[in-house]
Image (cartoon, rainbow, N blue to C red; front, side):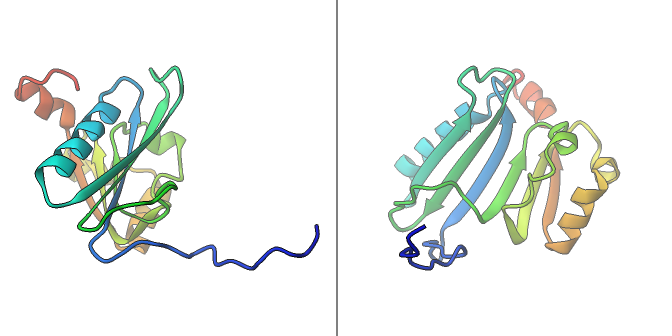
Length: 160
C-alpha cells in the first residue's frame, strides 16, 4: 500500500552443496512421523551430519495427511521454513496419488520418488495417475516402489 516494500527473489534459497532435503507424505497413525523423528535422531547423533526435521499434521493426527520435512547435511542447518525443493519424496499411502496432485511439485529435476504400494513393481507405473507419470518423465525423476507393509511384516515390525 505504501509502495515501500523491497523487491525479493521468490526462488532465493539458502541451500548449500551437500544438503539433502526429503519430504515424506503419510497418514496419521501409520508410523511415518515417528519413523522420521527416529531417523533425524539417529542421523544427528550417529553421523557427522547435522539434521533437522519439521512435521506438519492435524491436531487429531489419526487419519489425516502428515508431511515430514527432513534436512541432512555436513553444515549446521538453520532453515525456518518448509522444504520447497526436495531431493527425495516418499509417499507412504498410494491412495494419496488420487487425492493430492501436488505431491511431486517440490521434487527437483532428477530427484527420487518412492511410493509404498502393494502393486508389483512392473504394475506400479500403470497404476499411477497419468498426471504423475507425466511429471516423473518431465522432471527426469527416479521412480521406485516398495511394499513396506510386506517388508515390515516379514521383519516382525507389524504394520508400522
